[in-house]
Length: 263
Ligand SMILES: Nc1ncnc2c1ncn2[C@@H]1O[C@H](COP(=O)(O)OP(=O)(O)OP(=O)(O)O)[C@@H](O)[C@H]1O
Image (cartoon, rainbow, N blue to C red; front, side, top):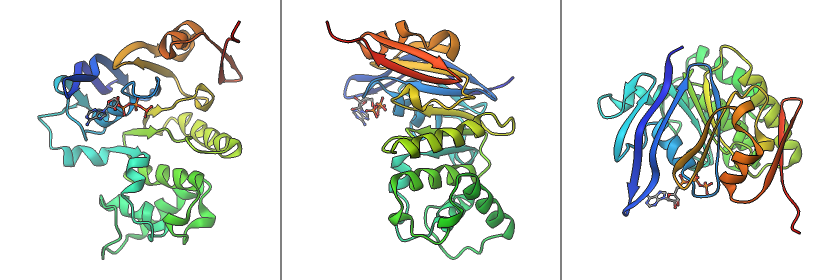
């Protein structure tokens, strides 16, 4: 199995502070990682490195076998799909859902005068269907609910047929039904052997889709644990990561965590 992401001794320093501190991490093809950690731990910074939008202050980052600093990022970026709030905010609110997904095939955020290929349109329709968005094709992106917007962003991220898919808090802000719907859809994607390697940032273990294989826990920019979910997502590691006593449980490929009651 080849590596889709490799960080060796990576630090990102801003204003004299290490946002990511001496991190070494390797993600192999086909793996599905969840990144957990408290607010400000450095999770989004890791995704920004993986999407080649951020370069390390020291250490080396290789994405899909290409080392940042010695590769044309404009060739690399279409090979990496990214769904995040930051990305959603760059998209025109007046564009339709179908256009929002289609423009990704042309490396654009806005609808210009490009004429879309029938093949691209069929692909966009298929991804939107897989994410339950077929009834919203002509809706303006800006009028979508949080959950609809999240699902559109994932369809958009899939449009370039990425080898690596990055999801930054895909279930944040969703109600219980929306979360469960998304977790099921991501679970189906995670179990698809033809789906890209995946990294997902989340705040809640309840949002880990079945089929995810690995976890990286980060605290204050440093890796606390990294490896298979079954061995690393333990009560001990989670308690150390979030700084309070937590009990984690798993049942039917889903995870839950709760704090111990105060005495
Ligand atoms: N350009 C910057 N300059 C200075 N500090 C920054 C910069 N970008 C991010 N930070 C800080 O780096 C730390 C890590 O940020 P990051 O967004 O990676 O955390 P996170 O784990 O994704 O947090 P959250 O869960 O709150 O989204 C935070 O304390 C943030 O304030």
